[in-house]
Length: 126
Image (tube, rainbow, N blue to C red):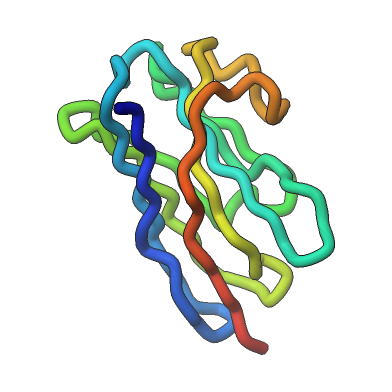
């Protein structure tokens, strides 16, 4: 059974940090790029970051560049999203997803992703 399980969300004050984890199972982790997406209330789901499984090349949306860092531990089939200098506008449900285009070329197109997690809530208070 394919599973992507996010964890690490929570409530944090503006300027604080959180580290999200995405644990994958049920598929060949090395054959997929992993992306992070988020969806705020009343807004469309948007791409936050992605990491290529071929060369660990990262991709970021402009609003998080310099604040978020994506990384991967292939031995643990886990991708992390370190989020620093959090802002209230980062508040959303964060999802991880798997893209069979291992170079991450599908990012940030949602339809490119085969598997999705259930999401973890991140709330940043002002």
